[in-house]
Length: 124
Image (cartoon, rainbow, N blue to C red; front, side, top):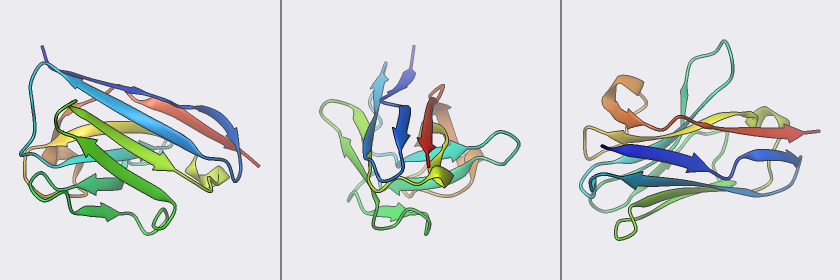
């Protein structure tokens, strides 16, 4: 059974750093893009960062460029998101997901499976 399990969320203050991790078990997705999305209650799920399945080229939402870094370890089958200089508007549930394609996209329906999410709360 394929599972994606996120960890590392919690409560921090504005300006702090936090690292999220996602462990994938059940199979390897080395040729697939992977991504982190986030969702605030009542709003659509949005792409935060994605990483290409072949050459590991990364893409970021404008709101997190220069602050967040996505990385993957194909041997350990993990995905991470280093978040620096956190802002209150970064507060959301963060999800890791595997794309059906090589390139990451913003479309949530391009991704399956998904993790269950981890809550990140940034206080001002």
